[in-house]
Image 1: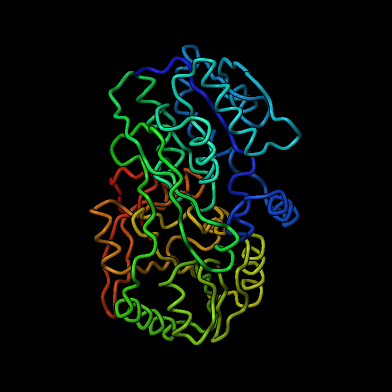
Image 2 (image 1 turned 45 degrees about the vertical axis):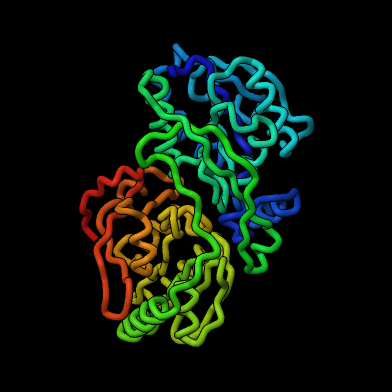
Length: 394
């Protein structure tokens, strides 16, 4: 298929709870808390990264969308011909507005709908469209367990470019899954199947469904924790550690005698847990304070990848903003993962999707991954999922 009319739906509030450390963005109260914490919406920016791949075709393509920040504003900013077929019922768009937009855009003759949001937005697509109309998700949420999303906005743009160029792109039905955010905030992860969407798929540009509920490899994780603790003990005790979410990183904190959070970002230094479940603003402030008090001691980030998908940055840890990542530096990134988790990737690279394509590209390359006690491998880290990971200087 070659695109002539592209539907565009942006969930303006998708992902805003991530940098705020709120584990999701569902609900008016969550959005308000994130805004009060100084967090700015990112879905417009992430949609822009994807749609920039289509700007060379602007004279050939019509964008069908809803008014304002649900799509019209961005489409006009990028110079596309725009057909506005509706608007949100009130000031701030709701899931009902998203579903209304999907139905109206389909009725207006769009060839495909691209939507920027998270798993909740994908559920809206299922409710409005079923599994027979093609859609493509641009990842802009916090969790994104579903398989209807491109692995990054840039990868989504490449799929759209190929469609616009008339290249052959397969269509497959892919699962939509979501979790209960209330349970997630309490440390319990349980995904539910909500249906399927028809999604264009090409190469490694589409993400897999996140693995969940698999038994933790306790011995392997314990070995990894022992190695990281040994490494920490050999470094300057004033080093500040930003510890990302996950059972493996939580095991490291446990080995250090600290009670961290499974699904949040914690701060650890000199034998003590400084803060738990911090947001992006708090992390930035902690780095600034650390450097004013201990100028020679580094800041390090400890992360593990999401099983099945391989995302290292940009899924469930949006508290690590591009500004935070640049402040710490790639050389101070510590990565841990069991060999089973790495093997399940089937040779696909680990992924970085920070909302900043230039940072994603700069951080691509081979990176050490601690897989056990005195056991380390070099593994590719990619900003576009192509698997082509140039070696970079640390």
